[in-house]
Length: 240
Image (cartoon, rainbow, N blue to C red; front, side):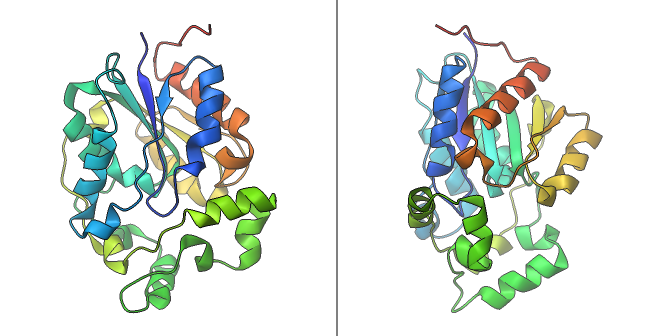
């Protein structure tokens, strides 16, 4: 029995991000779950340990029988060390999909490009940030999600996060990167992260598209994840 895939969305968006891709991975024989991180940030800090705890609580015994591989998009990448520490021997690997790499001991603002850091500070009002789609001109998200119904459902899940979330240092966790890891690059914005992953000796695959391609091209993204898992040495499931 191969590992169960845990498809984790960024705290900035919602689980819709992964749902169609989970279906396509199922068509390839993979078992997967899509936890929701909705509401975790509302409980107050420390946020990263609480997000990791929500991920682990979503993994029932039947999911973990063959171990689990975390598959993370965008801002969820920083959750890997805390989540794998809680998972212990059940953790079998991590796949970063257009995601930032973990930054133990540092906050998101510590490692962000100066322009992005200034933009977040500018957007903050009374300590809160607007929903993620409002960080950009309206046409930016619409160009990635041209279907009006999909666009509306995606936007409906977007939370507002406190600016302090991006100022919280990630916990110091050693050994998380001893697990097999790999990287899927979807957009030019994550070229540096993909290069960092390659420098660590991880397998890296590209699917040239955009940051939200798992929503609009779920089959192609699922097949790219499948190829990456094979390069990571994960057992390929038998398709019924």
